[in-house]
Image 1 (cartoon, helix red, strand yellow):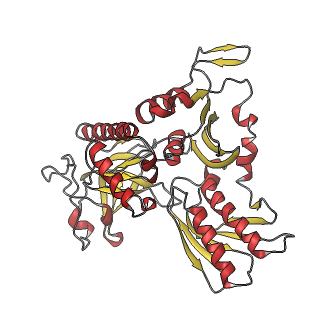
Image 2: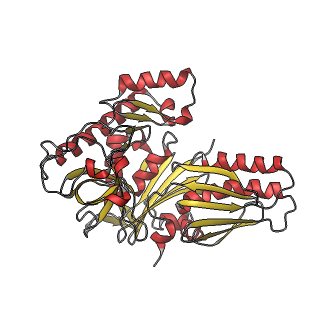
Length: 424
C-alpha cells in the first residue's frame, strides 16, 4: 500500500504544501503572500455596472486583496431573490430559487448598487478579473456544502449501484442542514466523520450568513482555503499517513541545540482546522523539529524547480516538451531512443496528467503523441490518458484524437498557474 505524506513549509513569501506518494511529488499547492488568491472566497460585493453585452454584471469586491478589484458575475450564476426590500442598500436573502430554464437577461436580475453575496470560482487571469458565482459551496474532504441548494447530489465517481442510494440515505440522516454534494471518498468513512464534517461546514455557512447581514459593503466574509487546507481537502478520503509542518516558532519561541520547540502560526492554524474539520488527522499532524529544513531533506526544492522546465524526462525514457502560449498549452511527446511508440505514449499519458496537476495548467491543452501504427494503439493511449486524469480534483475532459494525431483536452482554470506564482 502506498505511503502518503503531506509536507508543509514557509519559504519567504511562499506557503507550500507538497503531497508525496511513496516519496514522489504528486500534488503541490502554493500561496504567495505578494500574489494572494481569492479562489473560494465568499464576499459581500456591490454591483458596479451591468454589462449587457456579456450578459453579466461587474461586482465591486472591495479591498479583498488590498486594492479595489471587480469580478464578473454572469447571469447564469445569479440566484434570486437577492434583496429584502428592493432598496439598493438592503441585505441579501439566502435561498435557492433559481431563474427559469430560459435565461433571463442580466438587466432583469440585477441593478447597479445592489449588494450581492458571491464566491470567487476562478482567480483573475491576465486582463480578466475574477469569475464569480452566487452558488456558494464550502468544500470538505468528504462533503461539499451547497447551502443555497436543497438536494443531495452524488459524485459521478460513485457509480449507479445500490451503494450509491444507500450512501445518499446515510447523508440525509447524518448531515446538518440542506444542500450537499457527496464526494466519492464519503463511502469509505464512518458516520462519525461524516456527521462531524457536515456540522463544521454548516456552522461555517451560518457564520458567513450572519456576518453578511451586518456591516459594510463590499467586504470579505470568508477567505478561500489556504495551501495546506486545500491539499487536505483535495486528498479526500486518502488521508495522509503523516503531516509534517516546518514552521518557525512564534516570537520568543525556544530553540535548544538548533531544535525548534513550540508551534509556529502555520502549524497552529492547521491544528485548529483539523480539530474542527478533520479530527482523525490530529494524531498524524506534527512539527518538523530537525535543524535542517524539511524541503531540503526531501530534495523538494529541486523537484519544484523542475516543474518550471520546458522539457520533462519520462520515467522509462523519452521526454515531454511543455510550452504555454496565450491561447493554449502544447505538449509534445518525444520518443528518444525507445523503439515502441505505444510504450512511449502510455508512459507519457501518466506523466502528462501529473504535470498538468503539479503545474496547475488550465484551459485548452493539445498533446502531440508519437505516431502510432494502429487505431487500436491510439485508443489504448486515449483510455490511459482519460484514466490518468480521473483522480485530478480539477475537472479535466479528454475530447479525443484528431485526424492529425493530436489529442485535445481541457482543464478548468483554478487558482494561479505555478509558473506565475514562482516567477521573480
